[in-house]
Length: 129
Image 1 (cartoon, rainbow, N blue to C red):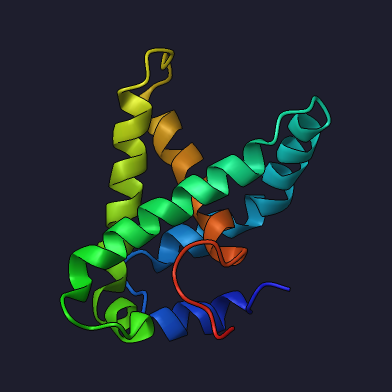
Image 2: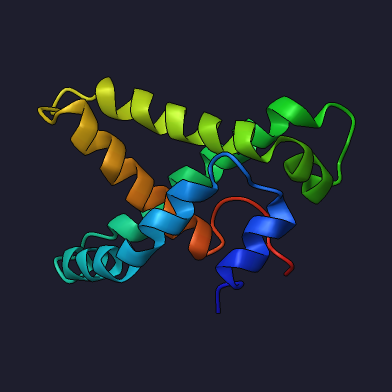
């Protein structure tokens, strides 16, 4: 079961990006329905997306770790930078895609929904587990 969202926001010391999670976490059930529908066609997009986001998260985390190995401390000190870094990397991936015909605003909202879902489901940032 995902860690309570407010507790996880506090644990990770997220301040500037908090609004993204709070605004878009409500879309998680809809996104999960979409993932489920796609999985029924033998495509496993949810796992692929969440693993890719998790890899991007670890890359961002490493940018701030130096010799520190205490992930929660690193995140608490750099949470908004890490969250923004994840978002920017995902945007770069989407914009460099050859099949991207969407408007930037639409892409930004979609990324916010996906990041909020990944946060709520403990795939990015730290949890108490």
